[in-house]
Image (cartoon, rainbow, N blue to C red; front, side, top):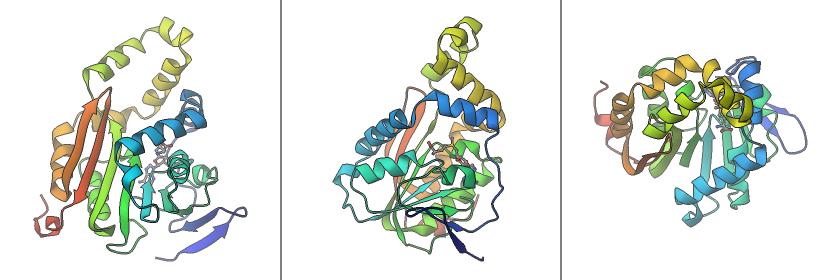
Length: 246
Ligand SMILES: C[S@@+](CC[C@H](N)C(=O)[O-])C[C@H]1O[C@@H](n2cnc3c(N)ncnc32)[C@H](O)[C@@H]1O
């Protein structure tokens, strides 16, 4: 694969592994995403998550890759916690261009990661797997790539939507027009769901297949579902590659 770097300002370098122009999120989704929470609120949320997932106890020079990194709130959170060797991967050059962390950024598809085998210490995803178009095949592909690039004892961390009773309640509430009128965040969420409905529902409706695939590649540590999310942490299972594909 040809790779070439493009400098956009003093600190942002994007390594392009695919042609730019891939569009994930339509403008309406993008607009709702921006008003759902401010960048600063999002960064604070990510810092709390990283602490919960044990990042405060990790050496600050480990190589960390954030997949589906979007505009880079998760990379800013890592920077604020002191991590110095961080990289982001996303399909959207428009979102990558909004990054201002100095991290190395890769314009690439997470189904084909631009990293050497066993070269990354930790992989993080803050919401991205539920955008994959075909489940369970694409999830198998992404997890297999994460397994390939992680070092022995490397860790995988993901936070994704999960159909808990709370999320069912939220779905019901944001159907009510008056709620959307007076609760801006609820309206933003409703618009985002509307514009990603196909992949979002496909994700929410396959919990058993998702858990099976996580177990195929990782030994799970934290595996919590609450408040409409799964918070998952796993360690690379060294023997996973010997298991025949299902
Ligand atoms: C919900 S956004 C999450 C962004 C980021 N994780 C955050 O919380 O700010 C989903 C992101 O996934 C990216 N994306 C979707 N499919 C992808 C793929 N196959 N490979 C890489 N990125 C992808 C989109 O461009 C978008 O930035």
